[in-house]
Length: 174
Image 1: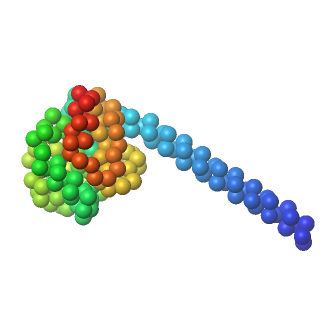
Image 2: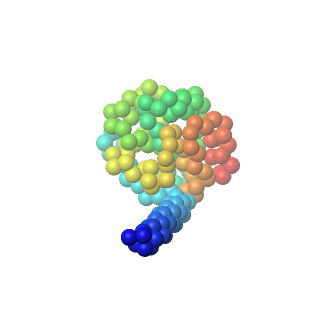
């Protein structure tokens, strides 16, 4: 019996280490793949608050793009949006895409709350299949993903950020 335990315990230990090593390598490779995929704006399809399809084809060419992943009940998301709304005129040369996994009615209510629904450069979309987080490698709210006018990734920012910082980053690549 002791012989079996002496063989079984190291075998279990080695198996566990091998399994954990495999998991770590797989996760690292996945992170690298996602990072490579978001270097340029990845292909996406969402639904806007009018129920129409919104995809890469709807983005303006040669215009910096700011994706804002939000939730209407998130305090930081509300504060971020309020700061953007207060300086909305400075965002005119950029396109802003607000993305949420909430129902279109809630997203529309959020847009109306900040009076942002009537701007040509601002879009509110519903991620009904909850793919934005995995496609853009986002794990927190709010999360901002900035792209330059050539659709190249500038930066991915987790959490609330000052408007001055956003404007500076979007303008530095113009």
